[in-house]
Amino acid sequence: MDWMEWYEGLWKPSWTPAPATIGAIWGMLYPVIAVTFLFVFVQVGRGRMPWMVAVPFAINLAANLAFTRIQFGLRNLPLAAVDILVIWGTLPWMMAVVWRHSPWVAVAQGPYFVWVSIATVLQLSMTWMNRPSG
Image (cartoon, rainbow, N blue to C red; front, side):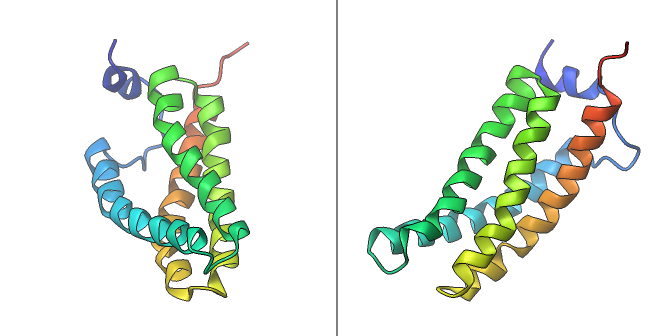
């Protein structure tokens, strides 16, 4: 069974966006994420921001990159729930530490935070709805 068949077979809340909608939203967010994260890493690399500013960005990036592999490769809903909580938790941390150095980067994370908040509730709901019975 391919990943889409597996995903379609899961119990999901009635308000779950269509896969195409989810993809479109990420398609709009990823360029902003790429530009802002690259900006932070370059500024840290040049010594214009302290290295600690990059820590939540690096954790967020690693967790974001891992999510698809965990959710659709391993098909592990509980681990994907933990992963998305890491993504969600690092976002306000990122916004707080970068604000003093580059407020535009913090503000640019707003749509990402809103979407990840929705995605987190969705993931936690799906994890609960598809938990093993017994």
